[in-house]
Image 1 (cartoon, helix red, strand yellow):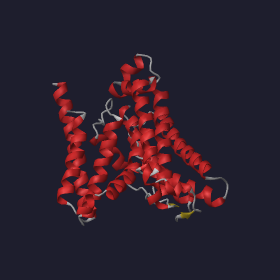
Image 2 (cartoon, rainbow, N blue to C red):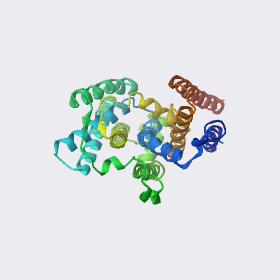
Image 3 (cartoon, rainbow, N blue to C red):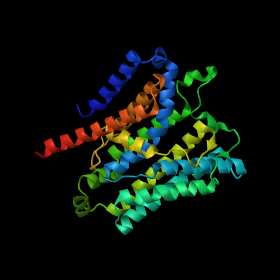
Length: 313
């Protein structure tokens, strides 16, 4: 039930909007829109899944996305590199931010919440500084096609390339968590850090690695955000970290650490997107969407805590 619960919830939410919402909600175009929007939250949520499994948290994700989108636009606009160079630079910028967070958490032994809260402001400020507090225009390249609506002659690929990128990254992340030593160490640290240390796990090194990976995935998310907006925007993705954390928690991840799956995270991301798309098409104001999302997050956390109390009993 723990594994099927998020999938069941997604089916119920989608069916609800199909029955209650406008006729346009059940069309293939709306499904494509949902997939495109989920690609941004889902890609960043993959990194957050690994962080939460290890018992951590990363509040700087949204700021890293904004910084990465600006980096992409600056490289393309300045003519210092092509699209691939821009993608590599954005990913490297995100990875560096994650590396700094991981190093501060392990070296200073400060709670991840505090460190990443500081990084949220620091990175956002850096993004605004690089962009001179305005949007950065860039020439049109194939990067803008990653999340653009498919033209009639490309319908054969079903969904935009950015969604396929999310699928590939999800498979890679699931492989790491399930079949590699790093994945086993993440679950061990999240379940009981001291026990993991006594068993020979290099806790500090693993934490630095996982925050670096999370930052790199946030950097790739910035590329997708750039594709969606076609500009680098230092003010974009404000609050995205909350959606990302919510996706992990709704999908069965535990903020206490030691639990989480890639499939659950993706389902949680889809639930968030379906709710927002459905309420928007029904013409409900933004504050209603926020209330509904908040209620779902609180319910998911409450269910998680109730389940843990039952297991402890």
